[in-house]
Image 1 (cartoon, rainbow, N blue to C red):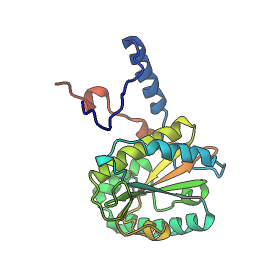
Image 2 (image 1 turned 90 degrees about the horizontal axis):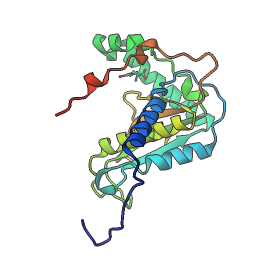
Image 3 (image 1 turned 60 degrees about the vertical axis):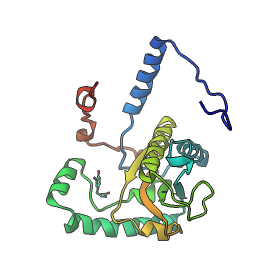
Image 4 (image 1 turned 30 degrees about the horizontal axis):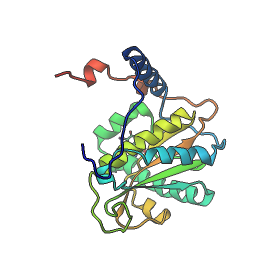
Length: 223
Ligand code: IYR
C-alpha cells in the first residue's frame, strides 16, 4: 500500500447472508428498469438530475481524469432543435443507411425515425466524452479509457435515476455531431448518447422482446 497522499479505506462489512441478500435486492430493483419510449411531460425535480450526475461523477475512470461532460437540456427551443436534427439523421438511417440485418435486429423493438420524446420528456442529458482535458479540463492533456469511463458513468447515472423512480431512454442518433453544436461543446468532446429522462406516459408500454434476458449460465463462465 502506498503511504503518501493515501488515506484509510474500509467498508461496512456484512455477514455473507446479508451480503447475498443485499446483492439480490439490488439486482431485483435493477431488473425493474426498462428502457421507456413514451414519456409524459410531468416534471422531475432538478435536484434528482443533479444527484444522478454527481453519482455518475464518482465512476471509476482512466487516471481520475473524469473525462465526461453532461449537458442538461430542458429549454423547449433546445429540445426542439435536438429533436429536429436527430429525426433528420434517423430518417436517413431507417430509409437506407442501416443494413437490412440491423433493421431486422431492431424490428422487435419497434423503433423508428419519430422521436417525440426528445420534446416531451422534461430533461435530456447529452453525454460527452472528453478525448482531452485531464483533471483540470485544460483541453490538451491526454485522457485515457475515455469510452469505458464514460460508459460506466452512464450506467451509474441510469441506475441512480431508476432508484429515484424516474424512467430513462438511452438514445444514440447517428451521426450525432449536431449535439456538439446545439450544446455548445468544444471540438475535443465527442457526443456519446442522449439520456432522455422523465416519467412514463400514461399507457406506456415496453416491448415484450426486451424482457427476454439471457440467463446467468449464458452470460457468465467460472474459471
Ligand atoms: N439510433 C436509432 C436506431 C437504434 C439503434 C439501436 I442498436 C437501438 O437499440 C435502438 C435504436 C434510433 O434511435 O432509432
